[in-house]
Amino acid sequence: MPSPPAWTCTGCGREWPCAVKQSQLLAEFGGTRAALAVYLGSCLVAAARDLPGLPLAQARNRFLGWLPRRPF
Image 1 (tube, helix red, strand yellow):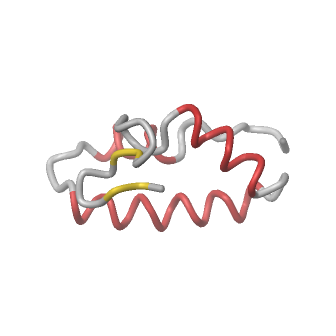
Image 2 (cartoon, rainbow, N blue to C red):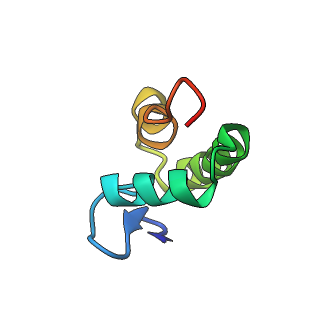
């Protein structure tokens, strides 16, 4: 789980979603990439409010840039 307002992983302390959480999210959403993208988009919006100094391109890559382009 993320820990707002810093948006770090509660398991490892790295930026959320960390590599472990990314793998877990892919498994949890079981191939429904669109649903996962909507969830991560809502997290991105919340994080943008909490982290106003985070550049948009960096935030987009952090929250959405790791999603597979093809169905997983």
